[in-house]
Length: 129
Image (cartoon, rainbow, N blue to C red; front, top):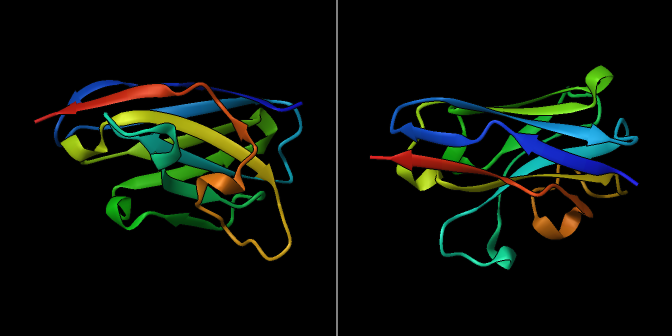
């Protein structure tokens, strides 16, 4: 059973940077891994896909709103997923979740919450203006 634990959230002013980490316990080498966020006041079902990375780390995709500002990466030897966030904006605030799922046929770099079966508990990111 894969378990995910996020860390690295915090409060920062607009324009600042934060780095998130997600440590995985269990076998995730053949999993897609992704970051999602739940903005303040939004329900769990409204989680937004932020970034996804392929099992080997060679391919990634991002939400349009974060392209050029966020970078997703993974170190499989450490079973760790990362999200580097730069030029943060107030609208980036929310609870950030790490998610993982085995690769499924026909699903390439999925960034929808329903594509993921394993979730962490989340780490809070607050960006003030």
